[in-house]
Image 1 (cartoon, helix red, strand yellow):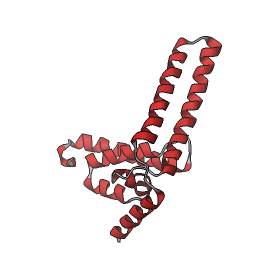
Image 2 (cartoon, rainbow, N blue to C red; image 1 turned 180 degrees about the vertical axis):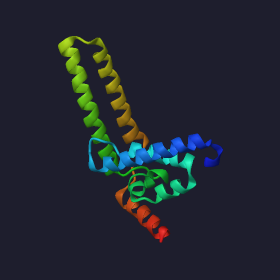
Image 3 (cartoon, rainbow, N blue to C red; image 1 turned 90 degrees about the horizontal axis):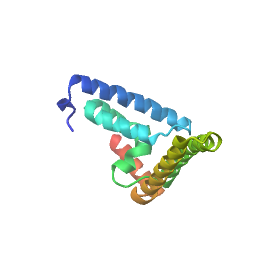
Length: 154
């Protein structure tokens, strides 16, 4: 999509959201409770719609290459990347599930029970997508792709 097709206000909002998502994704690398890949995917989407220069810069960063390059090329995600994302999601959703189940058991909150069911359905869908829909890229293939990209950059 050509960034020039968007109004200046829309491009500015895309840039701001993209930069925020890059920052959150970078923080997510250090904090296991914050997922990295979803933020980087949103940043890539925003930059592709806002600025060719920012899009080119973002695609050249190590953060993008190490988390999204293989997925962008249609090769899938490496198993460690999948496990990192699934582990974080499971931890965060498990914590929310615990508190909702506690509210249901202690206070009889029917909405907490519904929340538990929705959360379980979302988690199951997440597992299906990550392990049955998104391809798994072998580590050695991912390393070769990253090496190729680094050589092209020189």
